[in-house]
Picture 1 (tube, rainbow, N blue to C red):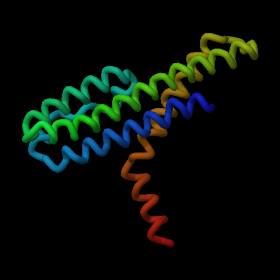
Picture 2: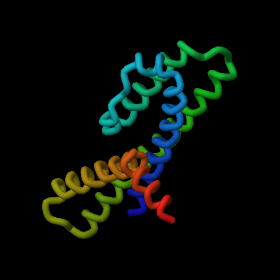
Picture 3: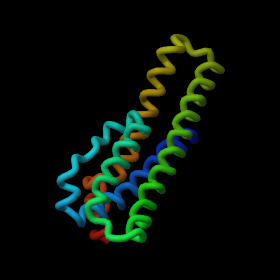
Picture 4: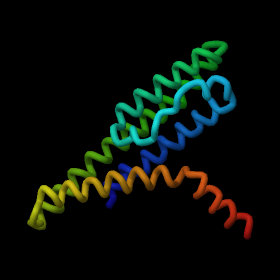
Length: 149
């Protein structure tokens, strides 16, 4: 469970960093709307998602950055998100390793299928846990509770 948390919450932190990055670009609707958004499903292949997000960001940056300092500030968002995602990928590999060890030590029948099923459950639940935490639905739910107090 601890390894799964080391996978899920760095992904969540990276999504928060990227969300700040996206919010900055949303101020420049003309530029960001012209650029096609990268599907969150690419998180199933994190290096590809990172590459596509960074490529999209660089295209947008070229349109509205006025000086080197603005460029450095904007790129720091991307670098932070990238760092968190690599921590998350490391946690994902550790999660897979732990699943393997638990199954092996307990001599679980159908070892291969059990491993695949548990790895998929851990991956999908980690992905959805992180994305749900940033969803508008969750934010509205928390805001309603906050307003009640």
